[in-house]
Image 1 (cartoon, helix red, strand yellow):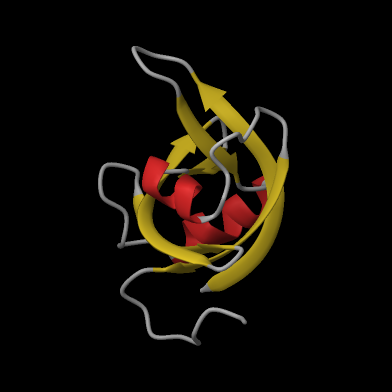
Image 2 (tube, helix red, strand yellow):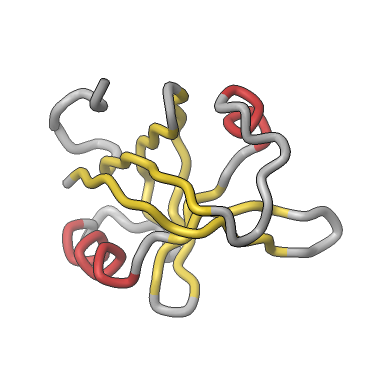
Length: 105
């Protein structure tokens, strides 16, 4: 399964702030169904593209939706070092380990 979506950036404070991109609820439900048997402790491995930056990560389930971790290296590569909570980003993602099309672009 692959999809393109737009969602808000979420800041998760802890000892250090973590940044995530929230996947819309409807898309999260579709991902959960498509990822049956691929999840590991609730997380789902995915390939992600934001702008021209590709990276791999694992979706985190939170409050009925998935969150895409925005790793520091990926944020830097995509020019998102100054990302703010609530900012809308568009991303493409595909379940890792499943054959499919190459990222768009």
